[in-house]
Image (tube, rainbow, N blue to C red; front, side, top):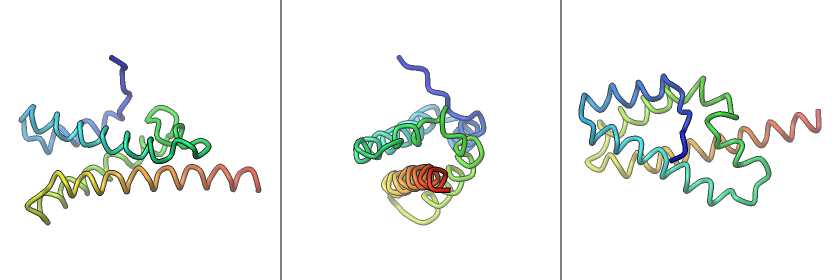
Length: 112
């Protein structure tokens, strides 16, 4: 199995909101990786998209993933009776935005 380098703060957020329930923690992690995989497939032809999705290479995850996860998990559990669907949609949006931000930053650094 490949070791995934999730930022520690992001893991801690998932643990906190799993409230000691390993099934819930596993479900959160599963949704995170399913959303990431979905965006990865959509963006396979976009230059640097895979780098943008890498927890190791895109340093933005270290700074924002915990905050994003907290917002998504809290909103999902407050706003809907289907929190998994809400979380999946929100996580896909988050990863798409990371790719867009990362790739547009690359273009600006080439131009600028």
